[in-house]
Image 1 (tube, one colour):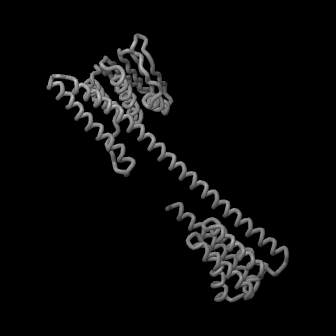
Image 2: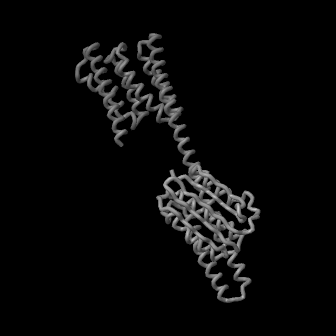
Image 3: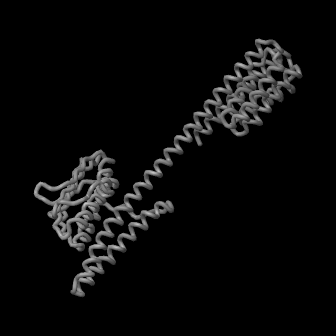
Length: 355
């Protein structure tokens, strides 16, 4: 608002200066009376003060007023400099604010009108054409540059939205893959155990895991449907519940979170998803097994190490899980490795810089 007011003050100042110059030329050259000079000077100059609000009407009024005062012999042709400046101010605004058709039409009308009253001398006509042509080119170039910047900003916003939706899709994959893996394992256990107590326990795990998955999925899908406020993203505080759910699925998880340094939300979410995906792989490919998850937090980085004592030979390939973990680490310029452990089993190590 302040910047806009500053521009209006500049226009008002320009209008006053042009009006004073036009009035001075009328009094100096023609010795006209004040009652004629003031309205004529005002008609030529004052519209410049509102050129940003009504660019086309201002161009029409300043051009017509300039032609009228010269034809009426109120202003001599030798003093056309100040009125032409008023026309150029308005023409520039039209070239910036209006379409090419409107601005070219304004240019032609202004050049014809001012050239027609400039005395008919070739040098005067060339000066008028050169001045107004240069003003139009500058204005139209400014319009093109603004249009390009707007398109670039729009494209960046669209790309940011697409990236965010891709991130949400990956989050959704992690939620579904992890929780459905637990549900599948527990459902298989419930189908094979003979003890009703163990079956009820497995069904209880399936019920709680399903509710947790639905809650996360609703939150993620809500981002795609609206801008409503959502619950905070999971982070390091949610690692304990991950370990508990994996333990209920037949994987004995030992979780060790070391350090209490502050971790940015994005890093915390990435650590949570890396541990979640690593535990999902253990449940799917190594259960029943023992698993150790160590998360070391320092002011400089967060290191995640998940190892298990399973068979150690798994066809993980380059599925979405490992790719997702690797990409999350790459976003923060960290390091990632996954493969058979030195003592057997499987080992996932990721380190994410905090700063």
